[in-house]
Structures are given as C-alpha cells and as structure tokens.
Amino acid sequence: MFTDIVGFTAFSKECTPGQVMSLLNELFSKLDALLDKHNVYKVETAGDCYIICGGLLDEDEDGFQTVSTASPSHAAKIKAARRALNFAVEMMRVAATVILPNTGKPVVLRAGL
Image 1 (tube, rainbow, N blue to C red):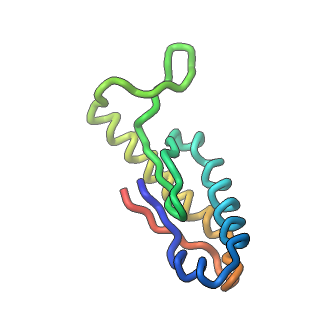
Image 2: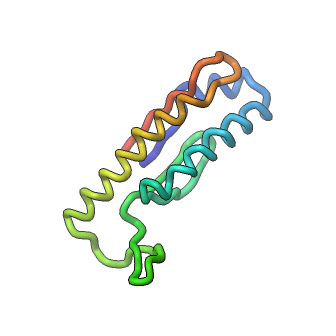
C-alpha cells in the first residue's frame, strides 16, 4: 500500500525545512506505532510517501516473526489485504491528529492498494 499527504508539495513550499521534517517525523512516528497492531510491514518512506506491505510476515513455532517464504493461500491473501485496509483506515484517523503548521488544518492522507 502506498500513502501520501494531500497537498504536501504546496505545504513544503510554504514552510521551513525544519517544519517539514518535524511534521513528517510526528506523522511517521504515529504510523510506525500502528504497524505491529495491524501486522503489516513498513517497506520504506520516501518524502511524504509511506509504503507498507501486508502478508509478508509469518509467525514461527516459537512465536517470532519471520519473512514468509511459502506461496500464500487465497484466504491468506484476503487476510493480508484486510490488514492493510484496516491499517489504512486507522492511519487516516491518526493522521487527522497531526496539524499542518501553515494552515492549522489536520493532515489528510490518501492511500492506494
């Protein structure tokens, strides 16, 4: 899943680099805190883009997370898609608690699966 901040380019032109980094740090820290809850994996952040994957991790017989090596079943694929979707819904709710310093409005994210 890919996500980005609506209006980020305009925001970054109007704010100082420090304000941009502060906003991204606050937002991404809050999103990072949701990863384990939804059992999704953060692949990368690039600028304002936050990239996650569901269905990449399995649990071994000792309860530790491992990278999935088997081809997932249809049911496992649906479960992974649901985890990513649930993460996206909560991510948008959490993003709304972060305020853009240039407008005083909450951050709005868009996501693509």
